[in-house]
Image (cartoon, rainbow, N blue to C red; front, side, top):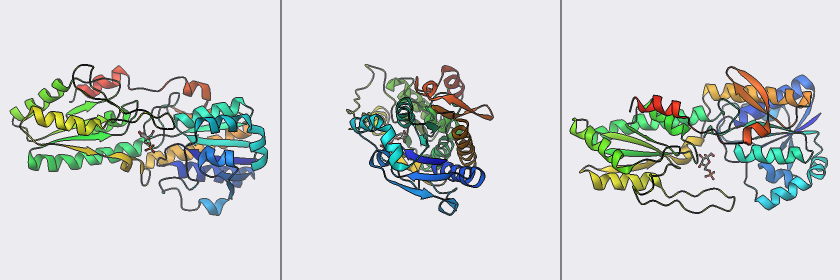
Length: 341
Ligand code: F6P
């Protein structure tokens, strides 16, 4: 078979591990040909690809980013591509496509699949917000990076008796902030799923200092918002691809805390550091397993499916199950975190 593989959407650690695994399983075990499509769906609609053999994936397991590149595609361009699915597949000479990406990619994969392109999706995202899989690769790495940042901020915050507000990624869900906040022992954890009261946050900080504590760390997800009426804060509009632009909650909140208490309060925006560099061992293993199962799915003809981690096993689930809604932090996980704040 000739299998096309692409990576789309925001990059994340572990993408190369999937590509490597796909090539090994397909080429070495099934005698397939693998075609790497460049820059995600943009390369698909523009017909840009290159052959991927075992030599091409040598040494990429530990590399962050994606050797195939990734890009955003405007919605109308994507719709046009979906309408030309057969023509695009013929041009690239592929019998099937493995699409590795986040929520947007998986949704696009579903559209191409419905249009008749044989697609298997592999979920990735540091945000861990894709439903139907217990976890996505990239998340563990991001949580490690964010936890290390919190650990480091603690020592400098304590030396200067400061409040540090660390803003972490997470557009619509607070998984990174919740997990890194718990692992790093943050004193406040603010996530999009639970609008916060700024007074409560400031009181918590004030109370810590009054107990003789020398610093406070507040972890806030980029998509977190204050409860209506508690703090003036506005997110921006949306970008050309329909993604929400945020208003800088970390900076805004640090300013609010500094006004409330007589202590310095500094924002730290961790940003894309959370997406860069080598994946953790756990992410490398999950990504490698997903790659293996994606190739098997192609050979079984399980198109329109996505690889998913269910407990310790990899299963194939309909893509439609994954895109029905976002996986948000449930109340039960919040209660466990809240108990140790
Ligand atoms: O969805 C993954 C993610 O890293 C989000 O957490 C973040 O908001 C977004 O991508 C940033 O994407 P970019 O800056 O690449 O547009």
